[in-house]
Every structure is written in C-alpha cells, then in structure tokens.
Image (cartoon, rainbow, N blue to C red; front, side, top):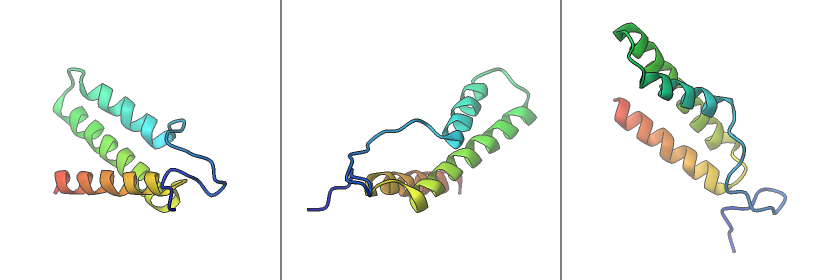
Length: 84
C-alpha cells in the first residue's frame, strides 16, 4: 500500500522545521501588515512571492515524501493562478 506520509527511510513525516524560504515568506507577509510606502509594499510583495515560489519548487523536486511534493504542487498552482 502506498503511504504518502513516509519518507525514503520508512518514517512518517508530516511536518518539519521551516526552512529558509518559509521563514523569509512569513517575515515578508508580517511586514506587509505594517503601514508602508507603495514602493516598499511592492518590494515585500515580490519577496513574499519569490520565497513561497522557491519553497514550493524545492518541495516539488526534493520533498521528503509524496504528501510534501503534492503540497508543493498545490502551493505552486495557487501562486501562479493568483498571480496571473
């Protein structure tokens, strides 16, 4: 039976410590709630998009299990559809 939560060692992995792109995304989203000039809002929006895109890309191609790869595909799809 296919278990989407198991990694290559047979361990169940659902969550793990956030990696750098997720931390950058979270910080940039928090900064966007501050009163900023339009140029800074545009900058942090771009940083936010880029960080989440990078995280999704990494999950798609090097996620530890099928669940993480599918999550990367879903996030990438939502990002691209909402952006364009």
